[in-house]
Amino acid sequence: MSETPETPTAPASGSERAIRATELDAADPLAVVRERFVLDDTVYLDGNSLGALPRTVPGRIADVVAREWGELRIRSWTESGWWTAPERIGDKIAPLIGAGPGRVVVGDSTSVNIFKAVVGGVRMAGKGCTEILVDATTFPTDGYIARSAARMTGLAVRPVEPARIADEVTERTAVALVNHVDYRTGRLNDLPSITTALHSAGALAIWDLCHSAGALPVGLDAHGVDLAVGCTYKYLNGGPGSPAYLYVREGLQERFESPLPGWNSHADPFAMDPGYAPADGIVRGRVGTPDILSLLALEAALEVWEGVSMDDVRAKSLALTDFFLECVDAHVPPGRVRSVTPADHRQRGSQVALQCPGAGEVMDELIRRGVVGDFRHPDVLRFGFTPLYTSFRDAERAARVLGEVLGAQPDAVAPGTAG
Image (tube, rainbow, N blue to C red; front, side, top):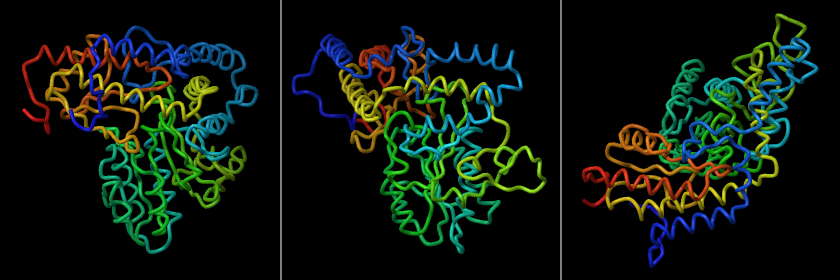
């Protein structure tokens, strides 16, 4: 292993780590929140792909289907608040990403919202801009959408490593689309300094928060972020395919021109005017009729955040990942895995990525033994730590089972480690 926190001079035994995990759970201020989720004996470390089911969701959806849809039917658009759900639920997400009311709207997919943000950002950029910067390590969809937006707007796309953006941005840059957390490695990119560097050159900052919202403080308003997009089915636990959200800085909202001017974002949608006039504020980020079932499942899911401090979430996330890495060092045979997640807390999201030969087969066996993470080609094991429901006992068990799996296999050395 490399890039792991310092281990004690006298290493603890496996049983001592299990005891310490129990003690850490007993002292955890978020431990009670775990009861708000539907969980079993599985160690679930894939919340960075799909969050666990909050207990409030099934009953809420049953009521929406049976009463709001089944009995009230069309009346629910007004009587049940369906029409205002995108902004209402946006205001519930806003505190989790450091945004004030009226700056987040929920609806559509992450891809659609990236398209709105990139094209809308280019339209607000200064004249003479010729390029869009894209995080060179980005999730593929972000790059696909950015290139399509560039073709439509006549600009070029230039991939840049996030750490190089401050040096690479120029007065010709319209916008930069950057992932807050690298989905492969769990590396946390420096949102405040990158945003400041972009603004210094006259460019707009667009952040993809899919792997950070709900896992760590973001501070969109405080750091002057222009636009941001994120999904809700990972750390926000909104359910499979739950709608994404769009953030537009308050000072930009009246200049924001969506490339998808649907009737739901019209200033007077029921006038059925053939001419388009955008609504005021964040409502102009809407497009078509909201997906009510998914929206209201998400709204119920967000109830788990009641009374939760994002500072506590971040502190537990770092403690969990530190403890997991310590346990991996103790349980996994030397040289079998290598951490590609930064040891530096300032550069770490809420997942641990381990490079491992035969990672796909290793993850299959982990899942068979009740430890669920995921695998990314060609050789990365990903373990997502969701502070609201992941326990320290989960972290210790996951590392112990990983050690058992790798200990039962023929020797193979992870890339970048000594043989």
